[in-house]
Picture 1 (spheres, rainbow over the protein chains, first blue to last red):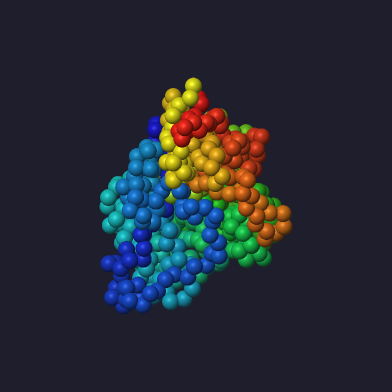
Picture 2 (cartoon, rainbow over the protein chains, first blue to last red):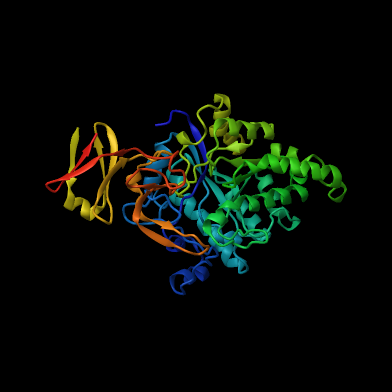
Length: 349
Length: 117
């Protein structure tokens, strides 16, 4: 259909149910799923008013299993249909990272999910690339990164966005481990992000609209805690958080830094420099900007390297590669967003 | 020209049917009240088939927390981004004059559903 090769950095493959993880869990944890009825905490209070709730209505496999859990259907509806050169699996198993306490079990779930992803997805299609799922506890997270980084298709570490800020020095061993392995970081919203001062707000439409707020928190936290001064080559993508707010934050942080830099003297460069060199953002969810509006955002960023194409398949707000960027943007910029920027970020040859 | 689509009894059961007439994708829908409408089977936003979506009542409300189902208006909701189109007029609910899908005249004759293209 599309003739332009592309890299899609947000594909949510799914397990059919927690039972899919049982073969990969040690005996002491297996029993919680098979015998004791353990289920993850469901933090988000909403359901959407539509058939298939959060999924595209046409993505449920014929056998009725969870959308995103069938490799064959994902291949047909996404990889083959749109000439996907590489597709980055971001999963939907962030609970193992953002849950509170009981980190030994969380670490086991994260490992099981990684092993499941390798066996059921990465081994079946070399176009698919993986994200390493980690527990939140840094020591266990580093062990998991060290264990999975050797897999040639594991190309990034996933840090889901929750109600805490990843830039805190407590988490720096995680960045150090990713950096040591040459892996970038991806951040994606989890189901428990909340609004500053507003909790979940009252409605899904409100909650979805405020997602960028949680992404702003992460970018500010990373920069002011000196993550990119410690690990200058490290790159972080903020997936599914929008990008129109990015130039706003670049300018706002620069102006604050000029006046207040003495409070964080370990931050050596202007904040906007870290945005351009170390942070990446995705097209999805595309907010229906026209070409002129989009080019003005690029102009304010002063960079064509910061935006990566993402589809978010099989979720309801999926953006098809051929129907996302406006037709009237320059071809070299389109090529960067659809392919080159992600290729550089993921360090693909 | 009128084209036969299906028997009305079939539409009574399945409620919406996707057809291709003269190379045009069209979705024929039957409302709760029994009247039949035909719309272009392509969402003007990103292009998926509206026939993969769902039929629903138009939900209205004038105070926070109030939900009233307007039984006179039914919508076809896109399978991807949930955009809603009035099945009688093809007009979107959020910008009726700007965003709409094409509609086609429908007639029911001797139990058969016909669309004029």
